[in-house]
Length: 198
Image (cartoon, rainbow, N blue to C red; front, side):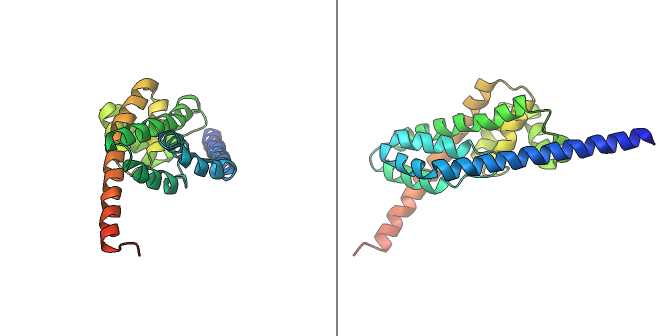
């Protein structure tokens, strides 16, 4: 009977630690967004360098998507008129891959705070990374679901080499952003023809 109480208390403490950790991460993330959001908007004037930093910032948020996506996609589309889609995708993906390192290092060094057993989606991501390694990272970095932060955390927990994680994330993100920016650019051209400026 006493062993059951101890396990229950231990699970409760882990859940409380996890809840406190998630709450503090969310609070810190949104505090930083509030404080540096206006500054990031000004980075758009820096062209490709601004795209790199905005992309890195939006991908450095953990679990919850950043509001910066409303800055990065329009900026990337506007830069597409001056630069090749390949260059824009490479810059966008480099910033995103480095930003995703936050989730990776959170998993790598915060394993004691994160109890993945209680989170089915996290456990699924960990299983995919464990079984499929680079292919899971590439595919899931292209896909909008599941939240890629969980993949980064799983890779960190599994002690997947950081440079490999960032490199394979980069490969998937180049493909993703080429499709996103290229598609958004084509839609913009179509809308401009359908609704010309007066």
